[in-house]
Length: 315
Image 1 (cartoon, one colour):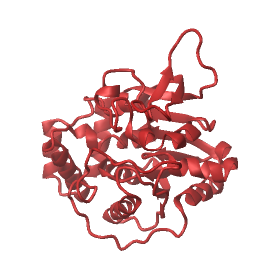
Image 2: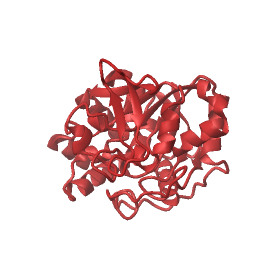
Image 3: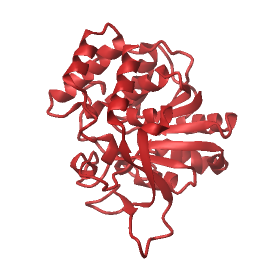
Image 4: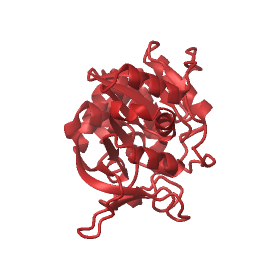
């Protein structure tokens, strides 16, 4: 079993990603940390606790992290996840309590406790992860890897067609806190970035048969997912919207699902039209050697991914 910390901002897709991770026999979730992103920190923290209770998981600590980006105000997400952040499902108010540790301190503690064995699944803005590295830079070589939903790399038309940041070019998580993303990208920790090119590909959509299978299930997780899908379909979007963050979880469960290319990537922290844009330098000559080299997702086995999610919520 791979030991993971899940840093997230639930949100619909984060909620489903938590379900996939916790129900996977391949992963051991050591901690969940929350960050402001899709919603303010109190909402994302409460939603993480709700998912823990939905699954009956009371032994996994949930730590509330940063309520705003490192150096700027929290942006308002133009994409709504509903008044509760979970597609109007309105799970019961949680009885579970948050850890007394701050999210960044939880990351530091868990990395040191499991030196060399911890994989970080970063599903929201990278504020907590960056702050942990700033507080305790010695943890960087102790982290096995980071798999992040982060960026948009221009590898296909979905890279910008489904841009989630509040400008024409960016992805939401990097857009919210580009300074934090820059710290993490430059950290030297092996980074696997799944951008919009792959995470919002239109092949990441359930079939009518699969939707019927979810609807007929008696599992609360399947009903939760079916409700989220109906919520986004009713607003003119497609089911990939609720699956984005699960792709990072699936990539750690089964690495062969995702194909990566190594590339040098810079992050725009100043542009008015391009704030948060991730720039992949693909030139044969005059490449900017000072940019960090990361692993950028360019292809996925979408059908196998969707079946993994289905099997998890139906089990």
